[in-house]
Image 1: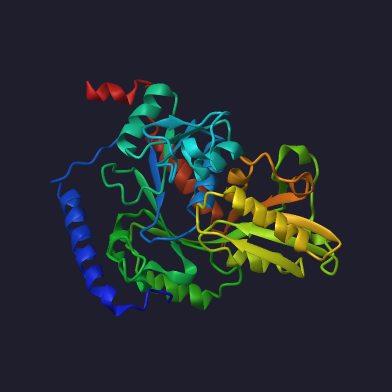
Image 2: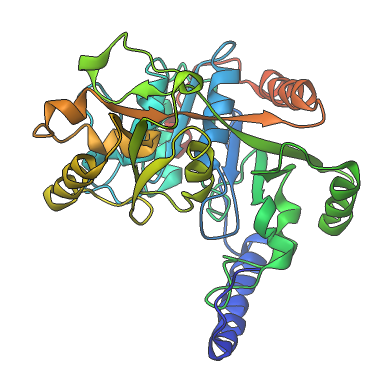
Length: 370
Protein backbone atom coordinates (compact mmCIF):
# COMPACT_ATOMS: atom_id res chain seq x y z
CA UNK A 1 0.00 0.00 0.00
CA UNK A 2 1.21 3.46 -0.86
CA UNK A 3 1.29 5.53 2.30
CA UNK A 4 3.61 8.17 3.64
CA UNK A 5 6.56 6.23 5.07
CA UNK A 6 7.53 8.89 7.60
CA UNK A 7 6.79 7.08 10.88
CA UNK A 8 7.00 10.43 12.70
CA UNK A 9 3.58 11.23 11.25
CA UNK A 10 1.96 8.23 12.93
CA UNK A 11 1.48 9.96 16.34
CA UNK A 12 -0.27 12.80 14.50
CA UNK A 13 -2.59 10.21 12.99
CA UNK A 14 -3.51 9.04 16.48
CA UNK A 15 -4.39 12.59 17.48
CA UNK A 16 -6.35 13.12 14.28
CA UNK A 17 -8.20 9.83 14.90
CA UNK A 18 -9.13 10.88 18.42
CA UNK A 19 -10.59 14.15 17.13
CA UNK A 20 -12.69 12.44 14.46
CA UNK A 21 -13.79 9.78 16.95
CA UNK A 22 -15.07 12.45 19.34
CA UNK A 23 -16.86 14.25 16.51
CA UNK A 24 -18.55 11.08 15.28
CA UNK A 25 -19.50 10.10 18.85
CA UNK A 26 -21.21 13.45 19.36
CA UNK A 27 -23.24 13.04 16.17
CA UNK A 28 -24.02 9.37 16.84
CA UNK A 29 -25.34 10.13 20.34
CA UNK A 30 -27.27 13.25 19.34
CA UNK A 31 -25.08 15.71 21.26
CA UNK A 32 -24.52 17.41 17.93
CA UNK A 33 -27.77 17.57 15.94
CA UNK A 34 -28.21 16.46 12.37
CA UNK A 35 -30.82 17.41 9.80
CA UNK A 36 -33.19 15.06 8.02
CA UNK A 37 -35.40 15.97 5.09
CA UNK A 38 -38.78 14.85 3.83
CA UNK A 39 -37.48 13.81 0.45
CA UNK A 40 -34.89 11.26 -0.67
CA UNK A 41 -31.29 12.41 -0.09
CA UNK A 42 -28.59 10.13 -1.47
CA UNK A 43 -24.99 10.65 -0.34
CA UNK A 44 -22.08 9.56 -2.54
CA UNK A 45 -18.70 9.80 -0.84
CA UNK A 46 -15.64 8.17 0.62
CA UNK A 47 -13.50 8.32 3.75
CA UNK A 48 -10.17 8.55 1.95
CA UNK A 49 -8.28 11.42 0.38
CA UNK A 50 -7.80 11.05 -3.36
CA UNK A 51 -9.89 10.00 -6.31
CA UNK A 52 -12.22 7.04 -5.88
CA UNK A 53 -14.45 7.87 -8.84
CA UNK A 54 -17.10 9.98 -7.09
CA UNK A 55 -17.99 12.03 -10.14
CA UNK A 56 -18.56 9.09 -12.54
CA UNK A 57 -20.70 7.37 -9.89
CA UNK A 58 -22.64 10.57 -9.21
CA UNK A 59 -23.22 10.96 -12.93
CA UNK A 60 -24.38 7.37 -13.11
CA UNK A 61 -27.01 8.09 -10.45
CA UNK A 62 -28.08 11.25 -12.25
CA UNK A 63 -28.43 9.38 -15.53
CA UNK A 64 -30.44 6.65 -13.82
CA UNK A 65 -32.79 8.80 -11.74
CA UNK A 66 -33.50 11.66 -14.14
CA UNK A 67 -35.55 9.27 -16.27
CA UNK A 68 -38.12 9.04 -13.48
CA UNK A 69 -37.65 11.94 -11.05
CA UNK A 70 -36.73 15.62 -10.78
CA UNK A 71 -33.07 15.40 -9.73
CA UNK A 72 -30.72 17.87 -8.07
CA UNK A 73 -27.07 17.49 -7.11
CA UNK A 74 -25.35 19.38 -4.32
CA UNK A 75 -21.62 19.71 -3.65
CA UNK A 76 -19.39 22.27 -1.99
CA UNK A 77 -17.84 23.38 -5.29
CA UNK A 78 -14.22 22.61 -4.47
CA UNK A 79 -11.75 25.47 -5.20
CA UNK A 80 -14.41 27.81 -6.59
CA UNK A 81 -13.91 31.52 -5.99
CA UNK A 82 -17.53 32.32 -5.20
CA UNK A 83 -19.15 31.90 -1.79
CA UNK A 84 -22.52 30.79 -0.52
CA UNK A 85 -25.22 29.03 -2.50
CA UNK A 86 -25.05 28.89 -6.29
CA UNK A 87 -27.09 27.10 -8.94
CA UNK A 88 -25.40 26.32 -12.24
CA UNK A 89 -26.63 28.09 -15.35
CA UNK A 90 -25.54 28.44 -18.96
CA UNK A 91 -23.29 31.35 -17.94
CA UNK A 92 -21.60 29.52 -15.04
CA UNK A 93 -17.86 28.90 -15.09
CA UNK A 94 -15.33 27.02 -12.97
CA UNK A 95 -14.65 30.00 -10.70
CA UNK A 96 -18.34 30.20 -9.79
CA UNK A 97 -19.27 26.57 -9.14
CA UNK A 98 -16.11 24.43 -9.51
CA UNK A 99 -15.00 22.03 -12.24
CA UNK A 100 -16.87 18.86 -11.28
CA UNK A 101 -20.29 20.52 -10.77
CA UNK A 102 -19.82 22.33 -14.08
CA UNK A 103 -18.96 19.02 -15.74
CA UNK A 104 -22.18 17.48 -14.40
CA UNK A 105 -24.23 20.49 -15.53
CA UNK A 106 -22.78 20.40 -19.06
CA UNK A 107 -23.59 16.69 -19.33
CA UNK A 108 -27.07 16.93 -17.77
CA UNK A 109 -28.33 20.51 -18.31
CA UNK A 110 -31.90 19.48 -17.46
CA UNK A 111 -31.21 18.89 -13.77
CA UNK A 112 -30.49 21.28 -10.90
CA UNK A 113 -26.77 21.45 -10.10
CA UNK A 114 -26.04 23.43 -6.95
CA UNK A 115 -23.05 24.18 -4.74
CA UNK A 116 -22.86 25.33 -1.13
CA UNK A 117 -20.22 24.71 1.50
CA UNK A 118 -23.06 24.66 4.02
CA UNK A 119 -24.88 21.56 2.79
CA UNK A 120 -27.89 22.08 5.08
CA UNK A 121 -28.43 25.56 3.69
CA UNK A 122 -27.84 24.13 0.22
CA UNK A 123 -30.68 21.63 0.56
CA UNK A 124 -33.07 24.25 1.91
CA UNK A 125 -32.10 26.64 -0.89
CA UNK A 126 -32.64 24.01 -3.60
CA UNK A 127 -36.09 23.22 -2.26
CA UNK A 128 -36.95 26.89 -1.95
CA UNK A 129 -35.93 27.73 -5.53
CA UNK A 130 -36.92 24.39 -7.06
CA UNK A 131 -39.74 22.93 -4.93
CA UNK A 132 -40.43 20.36 -7.68
CA UNK A 133 -37.19 18.56 -6.72
CA UNK A 134 -37.85 14.91 -5.84
CA UNK A 135 -34.36 13.63 -4.98
CA UNK A 136 -31.06 15.30 -4.05
CA UNK A 137 -27.68 13.65 -4.59
CA UNK A 138 -24.99 14.84 -2.18
CA UNK A 139 -21.63 14.68 -3.93
CA UNK A 140 -18.79 13.94 -1.46
CA UNK A 141 -20.94 14.35 1.64
CA UNK A 142 -20.07 11.29 3.73
CA UNK A 143 -18.21 13.38 6.36
CA UNK A 144 -20.88 16.07 6.38
CA UNK A 145 -22.63 14.77 9.50
CA UNK A 146 -24.96 17.77 9.83
CA UNK A 147 -27.12 16.05 7.22
CA UNK A 148 -28.40 12.56 7.81
CA UNK A 149 -29.00 11.21 4.30
CA UNK A 150 -31.71 8.70 3.66
CA UNK A 151 -29.28 6.57 1.68
CA UNK A 152 -25.46 6.51 1.71
CA UNK A 153 -23.10 5.07 -0.89
CA UNK A 154 -19.47 4.68 0.17
CA UNK A 155 -16.74 4.28 -2.45
CA UNK A 156 -13.33 2.67 -1.95
CA UNK A 157 -10.62 2.16 -4.56
CA UNK A 158 -9.78 -1.46 -5.42
CA UNK A 159 -6.05 -0.70 -5.43
CA UNK A 160 -6.10 0.88 -1.93
CA UNK A 161 -9.02 -0.45 0.04
CA UNK A 162 -9.93 1.68 3.03
CA UNK A 163 -9.54 -1.33 5.35
CA UNK A 164 -5.83 -1.44 4.47
CA UNK A 165 -5.19 2.27 4.92
CA UNK A 166 -4.19 4.51 7.83
CA UNK A 167 -5.55 7.74 9.23
CA UNK A 168 -4.18 11.04 7.98
CA UNK A 169 -1.50 12.30 7.82
CA UNK A 170 0.30 8.93 7.89
CA UNK A 171 -2.26 7.47 5.50
CA UNK A 172 -5.25 8.69 3.52
CA UNK A 173 -8.22 7.97 5.80
CA UNK A 174 -10.35 10.93 6.84
CA UNK A 175 -11.86 8.82 9.63
CA UNK A 176 -11.56 5.25 10.87
CA UNK A 177 -12.59 2.45 8.53
CA UNK A 178 -15.14 1.23 11.09
CA UNK A 179 -17.27 4.22 10.14
CA UNK A 180 -18.13 2.56 6.87
CA UNK A 181 -20.99 1.11 8.93
CA UNK A 182 -22.89 4.34 8.12
CA UNK A 183 -23.14 3.27 4.48
CA UNK A 184 -26.08 1.43 2.96
CA UNK A 185 -24.01 0.45 -0.08
CA UNK A 186 -20.25 -0.09 -0.38
CA UNK A 187 -18.77 0.02 -3.89
CA UNK A 188 -15.29 -1.24 -4.73
CA UNK A 189 -14.39 1.14 -7.55
CA UNK A 190 -11.80 0.90 -10.33
CA UNK A 191 -11.88 -2.90 -10.09
CA UNK A 192 -10.15 -4.97 -12.78
CA UNK A 193 -12.51 -6.11 -15.49
CA UNK A 194 -11.23 -9.66 -15.10
CA UNK A 195 -11.33 -9.91 -11.30
CA UNK A 196 -11.56 -13.56 -10.32
CA UNK A 197 -14.30 -15.04 -8.10
CA UNK A 198 -11.62 -15.90 -5.53
CA UNK A 199 -10.35 -12.30 -5.41
CA UNK A 200 -13.89 -11.08 -5.04
CA UNK A 201 -14.64 -13.44 -2.14
CA UNK A 202 -11.41 -12.43 -0.36
CA UNK A 203 -12.27 -8.74 -0.59
CA UNK A 204 -15.85 -9.30 0.54
CA UNK A 205 -14.52 -11.20 3.56
CA UNK A 206 -11.97 -8.47 4.35
CA UNK A 207 -14.54 -5.72 4.09
CA UNK A 208 -16.76 -7.69 6.48
CA UNK A 209 -19.86 -5.70 5.63
CA UNK A 210 -22.88 -5.66 7.89
CA UNK A 211 -25.99 -7.66 7.04
CA UNK A 212 -27.89 -4.49 6.09
CA UNK A 213 -25.23 -3.41 3.58
CA UNK A 214 -24.94 -4.26 -0.09
CA UNK A 215 -21.50 -4.51 -1.72
CA UNK A 216 -20.78 -4.08 -5.42
CA UNK A 217 -17.75 -3.94 -7.71
CA UNK A 218 -17.50 -1.39 -10.50
CA UNK A 219 -14.91 -0.73 -13.15
CA UNK A 220 -14.17 2.46 -15.05
CA UNK A 221 -15.02 2.47 -18.75
CA UNK A 222 -13.30 4.89 -21.08
CA UNK A 223 -15.73 5.98 -23.77
CA UNK A 224 -15.29 7.36 -27.29
CA UNK A 225 -13.39 10.67 -27.46
CA UNK A 226 -15.46 13.83 -27.82
CA UNK A 227 -14.39 17.30 -29.03
CA UNK A 228 -13.37 19.78 -26.35
CA UNK A 229 -14.43 22.86 -28.29
CA UNK A 230 -17.70 23.63 -30.08
CA UNK A 231 -15.89 24.32 -33.35
CA UNK A 232 -15.41 20.58 -33.67
CA UNK A 233 -19.11 19.73 -33.41
CA UNK A 234 -19.91 16.64 -35.43
CA UNK A 235 -16.25 15.71 -35.83
CA UNK A 236 -16.06 12.23 -34.32
CA UNK A 237 -12.83 10.40 -33.59
CA UNK A 238 -12.53 6.62 -33.35
CA UNK A 239 -9.53 5.34 -31.40
CA UNK A 240 -9.79 1.93 -33.05
CA UNK A 241 -9.04 3.54 -36.41
CA UNK A 242 -5.85 5.23 -35.24
CA UNK A 243 -2.55 3.90 -36.57
CA UNK A 244 -0.01 3.84 -33.78
CA UNK A 245 2.96 4.28 -36.07
CA UNK A 246 1.93 7.69 -37.36
CA UNK A 247 -0.24 9.28 -34.68
CA UNK A 248 0.97 11.07 -31.53
CA UNK A 249 -0.80 12.86 -28.71
CA UNK A 250 -0.23 15.33 -25.93
CA UNK A 251 -2.04 14.04 -22.85
CA UNK A 252 -3.04 16.84 -20.48
CA UNK A 253 -4.28 15.78 -17.03
CA UNK A 254 -5.13 17.50 -13.77
CA UNK A 255 -6.61 14.56 -11.86
CA UNK A 256 -5.60 12.52 -8.82
CA UNK A 257 -4.39 9.44 -10.71
CA UNK A 258 -3.84 9.81 -14.48
CA UNK A 259 -1.86 6.57 -14.94
CA UNK A 260 -4.85 4.34 -15.88
CA UNK A 261 -5.82 6.80 -18.61
CA UNK A 262 -2.27 6.99 -19.90
CA UNK A 263 -2.01 3.20 -19.98
CA UNK A 264 -5.32 3.00 -21.83
CA UNK A 265 -4.23 5.49 -24.48
CA UNK A 266 -0.83 3.80 -24.88
CA UNK A 267 -2.72 0.95 -26.49
CA UNK A 268 -3.60 3.28 -29.36
CA UNK A 269 -0.67 5.68 -29.60
CA UNK A 270 3.08 5.03 -29.60
CA UNK A 271 4.01 8.67 -29.06
CA UNK A 272 2.57 10.27 -25.92
CA UNK A 273 3.82 13.44 -24.26
CA UNK A 274 2.16 13.55 -20.85
CA UNK A 275 1.70 16.89 -19.08
CA UNK A 276 0.53 15.98 -15.58
CA UNK A 277 -0.75 18.50 -13.03
CA UNK A 278 -2.27 18.12 -9.53
CA UNK A 279 -5.95 17.32 -9.09
CA UNK A 280 -8.26 20.31 -9.82
CA UNK A 281 -5.27 22.27 -11.13
CA UNK A 282 -6.22 25.70 -12.41
CA UNK A 283 -4.51 26.03 -15.78
CA UNK A 284 -2.54 29.19 -16.50
CA UNK A 285 -1.30 30.87 -19.65
CA UNK A 286 2.10 29.33 -18.88
CA UNK A 287 0.51 25.88 -18.84
CA UNK A 288 -1.16 26.53 -22.19
CA UNK A 289 2.25 27.55 -23.57
CA UNK A 290 3.62 24.18 -22.37
CA UNK A 291 0.79 22.42 -24.18
CA UNK A 292 1.58 24.32 -27.39
CA UNK A 293 5.27 23.50 -27.09
CA UNK A 294 4.60 19.81 -26.47
CA UNK A 295 2.19 19.70 -29.41
CA UNK A 296 4.83 21.15 -31.72
CA UNK A 297 7.41 18.65 -30.41
CA UNK A 298 5.34 15.66 -31.49
CA UNK A 299 7.12 13.99 -34.40
CA UNK A 300 4.14 11.94 -35.61
CA UNK A 301 2.45 12.88 -38.86
CA UNK A 302 -0.95 13.21 -37.16
CA UNK A 303 -1.28 14.99 -33.82
CA UNK A 304 -3.97 15.30 -31.14
CA UNK A 305 -4.44 16.82 -27.71
CA UNK A 306 -6.22 14.47 -25.31
CA UNK A 307 -7.48 15.38 -21.86
CA UNK A 308 -10.02 14.31 -19.25
CA UNK A 309 -13.61 15.49 -19.11
CA UNK A 310 -12.94 17.47 -15.93
CA UNK A 311 -9.87 19.13 -17.43
CA UNK A 312 -11.79 19.94 -20.61
CA UNK A 313 -14.17 22.05 -18.53
CA UNK A 314 -11.26 24.24 -17.41
CA UNK A 315 -9.53 24.19 -20.79
CA UNK A 316 -12.56 25.72 -22.53
CA UNK A 317 -12.06 28.95 -20.62
CA UNK A 318 -8.99 29.78 -22.73
CA UNK A 319 -9.74 31.60 -25.97
CA UNK A 320 -6.15 31.99 -27.18
CA UNK A 321 -5.32 28.35 -27.89
CA UNK A 322 -3.93 27.91 -31.39
CA UNK A 323 -6.55 26.82 -33.90
CA UNK A 324 -4.54 23.73 -34.89
CA UNK A 325 -4.66 22.54 -31.29
CA UNK A 326 -8.30 23.52 -30.72
CA UNK A 327 -9.46 21.45 -33.69
CA UNK A 328 -7.35 18.50 -32.51
CA UNK A 329 -8.43 18.60 -28.85
CA UNK A 330 -10.55 15.75 -27.44
CA UNK A 331 -11.54 14.51 -24.02
CA UNK A 332 -12.21 10.96 -22.86
CA UNK A 333 -15.54 10.58 -21.01
CA UNK A 334 -15.51 8.05 -18.18
CA UNK A 335 -18.43 5.83 -17.25
CA UNK A 336 -18.80 2.91 -14.87
CA UNK A 337 -19.79 -0.71 -15.31
CA UNK A 338 -21.09 -3.00 -12.59
CA UNK A 339 -19.36 -6.36 -12.50
CA UNK A 340 -21.00 -9.73 -11.85
CA UNK A 341 -24.28 -8.65 -13.48
CA UNK A 342 -25.13 -6.49 -10.46
CA UNK A 343 -26.33 -3.47 -12.43
CA UNK A 344 -30.03 -4.31 -12.36
CA UNK A 345 -29.97 -5.06 -8.64
CA UNK A 346 -28.24 -1.76 -7.88
CA UNK A 347 -30.55 0.23 -10.17
CA UNK A 348 -33.68 -1.30 -8.65
CA UNK A 349 -32.41 -0.67 -5.12
CA UNK A 350 -31.86 3.04 -5.83
CA UNK A 351 -35.09 3.56 -7.76
CA UNK A 352 -37.16 1.75 -5.12
CA UNK A 353 -35.64 3.87 -2.35
CA UNK A 354 -36.50 7.12 -4.14
CA UNK A 355 -39.96 5.98 -5.17
CA UNK A 356 -40.90 4.85 -1.65
CA UNK A 357 -39.56 7.98 0.03
CA UNK A 358 -40.56 10.63 -2.50
CA UNK A 359 -42.62 13.30 -0.76
CA UNK A 360 -46.09 13.85 -2.15
CA UNK A 361 -46.47 17.53 -1.29
CA UNK A 362 -44.57 20.44 -2.83
CA UNK A 363 -44.29 22.57 0.32
CA UNK A 364 -40.81 24.05 0.52
CA UNK A 365 -38.64 22.53 3.23
CA UNK A 366 -37.61 26.07 4.18
CA UNK A 367 -41.01 26.47 5.81
CA UNK A 368 -39.84 24.03 8.49
CA UNK A 369 -37.51 26.78 9.72
CA UNK A 370 -40.41 29.11 10.45
